[in-house]
Structure formats: C-alpha cells, structure tokens
Image (cartoon, rainbow, N blue to C red; front, side, top):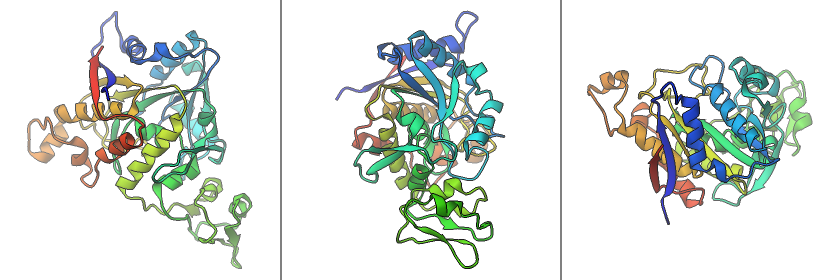
Length: 370
C-alpha cells in the first residue's frame, strides 16, 4: 500500500502570504479541489472552545474554509456535538452561547452554526459499522446527514489518550451524548441521589423502561434493562444522572477510532490539524496550560490516521517548551515523547494502530511541504 499523503505548511507568513492564504493553499493541495461541493451539505466539524480555555482554534480559519466551500457551490455549516459532562456546552442553548462568545457565529464565520446532536444531545443517527467494540455508532444527526465532512482539529495533548487530533475531533466530537457515554464507559450511568429532584425527565425519556422513581422520589436505574444510551445523562438538568468513568485509555482510544470511522463512512472528507497552542490537556477543560512545544504549523490530509501520526511525529521531533526542559533537567528533548511526558500512563499509538486495523487510514505517510 502506498503511503498516504500528508501536506504541511509552517507558521511563517509574509505581507503577501498570511496564514489564511497559506491555509487555503494547503487544503487545496490536500484534496479540496477534488471534492464536488455543488449543493452539498458540508459539515465543518470544529471544537467551539470551552469557556475559559483560550487554546481553541481561531474562528478566522473556519470562516476561510466556509468561504472556499461557498465558492464551490456548497452549503457549509459549523458544527459540534454536546458534551457528556454537565457544563457550559452540554445543551444546545448553552453550547451556542459559548460558541458565539468565542467568535463562532454566523456573522464572523459566514455560515450557520448548528449543534450536531440537538437541544439535549439526544438527536442522532445510528451508523452501522460492525467493528470490534462498536456495532452501531450514535452520530449526531446534523453530522450524519451531511454530504461532506471537513474537520478542523486543534492538535494538543489529552489526559486519557495521549493527544487529541483528527480522530478525537471526529470520533468523540461527532458522537451524541449516548455515543460519548459508550466510548467513555462500559457501565450504565449512576444516579447521584443528592442532586436528584424527582423531576421524572429521565423516566419519561428512557426508551428501555430502565429508569423509575423510588418511594423516596429519587431516580433508580435497572442495570438489567439499561442499554447505556445516555438519554438520562443528556436530559438531566441537575447533574444527577452521571457517567461512571471507567474506560481505560487504550479501550477509549480504540472506540474513538471506530466512531471516527462511522462519522466519515461513505462521505468525502478532508481533515486539517492545527499544531499550535499545543496544550497538554484536552480543550474541554475550562483552562489551558502552557504549550508543550512552540507552534509548528498546519497539516492536512484525506487520511485522518496518517495525519495524526505525522503531527505526533512532528511534535515529538520538536524541541520542548521551557517548562518541560526544566522538569526533565534537559535542554532540548528533541525526539522525546512529549505526550507520554505530559501523561505517563497513556499510549497515543493505540488509537492510530486500531484506526489502521479497521481501515480508517494508514500509519505510513509521505510528508509534502507546501
């Protein structure tokens, strides 16, 4: 099998060639021109940024890609799915407010902003994949119904999977709340009784008759009936129905790869990784720490596995930021595994190896500089 092509441009810019123009050249070289966008619904999958975290991608990048799609006759929209945890992006009204406050709005982006899995994270399509862990993936409807997927991914560290890039943005980011629950946990949700108000919403919304109110008017889950769909977690507005976080990093990484496979199944897709502000932790935190390396550049490919592998290699080959050098008492750390240094119990190769196994992409790549 021929190595997949990964296109790369560095962060240097000039008065005649700024980063937005470089991004445009990059995505055109990586396969944008070969996609038929005419009248096609095109989902631009991006993380809108957790309020308080300033490492998210600048909306200017998404706006430029949206303009390019419009020029080709396509119908772009920015999208992301609701979070599994109870927070400022766990439902569509709050999620849109967070997106707008971070600059992702129709005026700045030049296209609409759509929450992929609906008001409460319960709007999804089941995509049949029949893989090792995933039989049917629960993908947000606004993404599953798209004709084309363009993913814009902030490449950074992650406390459970080592790093987050294209696979993470596609696999976890395109999943409904129930899909996120499946990936993060092999167990049914649990009820935090202290928070339960007896509002009955989890009972009403359970399609499997697995939730009932006890004599104390507190919700109870019958684990024999529960399918782990995550509806109760999604509809609970009091943070009473909660995830039992139990999936180990390796299993989580494999499930993410399988959900990424489902998200792009049967669709033209192009993926862009921004290797900048490479914070050690996930963007879902309400803060961002000092980057582990200096900004490197932007990479793009139609192969998300090869793209993530190339970006991980570039980060590891780069000199580390000063705070890692101090920690390790070393002046350079070129070639060191920066992600394992940040999170010693993770192995970022696991998800990539599984992605290649399920034929999502290839670990073999050819880096082409633009």
